[in-house]
Length: 119
Image (tube, rainbow, N blue to C red; front, side):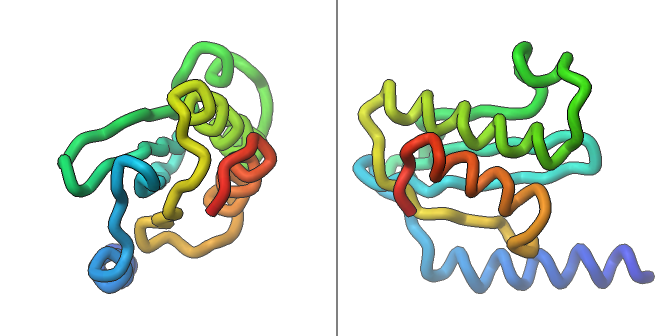
């Protein structure tokens, strides 16, 4: 019962935020998905309905390292910032996807900011 409440709560927050947050080709939406073991991030152009870039903690350089999940999230943030810079994207809209802004989500955002993304 508690699990269902948590999922429903997150989906309600997600729905409420997505009414406002939209991504364009110039300023894509940076969407975060957090599972129990991994963290994923995508840059999405909502007008075209396409994912422009993606990064995750499952990529080769990050997955093998013996570091905490928070540190992995920071590396994923830096990786997506690096990929975005190469694609000519500097500004994004951050979509935490209904997750609370602390822990791994915050670490990913800080890593992306340190990598040069603005949001």
